[in-house]
Length: 501
Ligand SMILES: C[S@@+](CC[C@H](N)C(=O)[O-])C[C@H]1O[C@@H](n2cnc3c(N)ncnc32)[C@H](O)[C@@H]1O
Image (tube, rainbow, N blue to C red):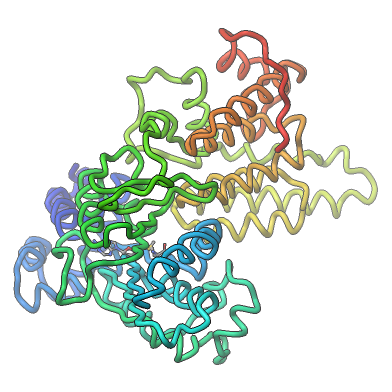
């Protein structure tokens, strides 16, 4: 595990273990060099050698806590925005919150916790939603708590001041109604700010429920895009603590797929189009919660929308199961540079007047190359921005949507990933084989095996109908014949039920 040829690198495994124990966060092997540089900087800032800095972090003194406080912002990803994951917010608005409000109508108390709230966009979005949903909110005893490990993020959350970028999923009228512009930032209305209490809290270390900190008997807990950084035992441990912090019948929402494959004691779940929703088991279980949905339905079909990974989850694996990579080895955006050069307009065919078009095409290719590179560095927002720029130049291009779908899924946004793949299908219904296949994997995760089957049949039919040498987007080197051979060669001919994407 040590960074090759670097004596300080020998300490890396110990630091990694310490960080995991303290925060749950796993450091990927490809980030070891980066981590070593970061730790050296932090050690230097407190005028310590690396071994002495390690000892400082293992201690329990005020200085130790300060060292963690300074380190944590650098090892966590605090990416957040208002109304992140529109599908889940739609579900909250139309189903979950109305049900909770109806249940609590008599006692008029609502207890909500956004765990791992970063800079506050998530709990504030909930506060805004409640303000819109409950006419007599002032008569309710409302508790909304936002917590995070990162003290710096919590201080910023308390300020309630945001950049434009935080509103990328927020309808403009909501921003206009609840925020006031201050230079190039937006300040949240004091009334909404006062609805949310913020605290620092470590989901891995802290005991739960915690009556002293008002973390108990929650009607709703949101813990989204936090588990992605933890290993499975830590996810299971934290999920158990969150379950204990819900009231019986209380709801838990996580990022998409973050609890798949775990045995969840004390939680029922229900699958909606938008998301899986968990609910602490009622003392008298309610019949409307679906029971008996086979776990294998989920376990068997978890995939990434990365074409290579998704194809692996299709009918026939591209590689033998024994060579399955570990999650830390996963390279979701591994299209070769040339993949993006499949954009159709070429210099020779552009002709007179084509130079402008050629420039545009080249710039699209360039934008996509850069987007892919940024996605590989987990700089998803920048990568997505470049994809949108590419689409502004070539609105009918499909490759940017493939990359957007991969990014969306990598971020746990399955609804977004499906939207992007549907766009590809809309734009290229008779060639978008990879989009049909990836979409099939995604709907299968949601238990819609019938639709997954139809989508795969459509992909199979198209592969049969395309000239065998056709290169299948977004690959550069896989032909229709090869893909057919890999996926369907041992199956009967397709049943011909064409999907309405
Ligand atoms: C990507 S943000 C998610 C923010 C928000 N929930 C959302 O989905 O937009 C992940 C947050 O989890 C926090 N986090 C990571 N490990 C944590 C832990 N052990 N306890 C509490 N928060 C943690 C990070 O500090 C970061 O702010």
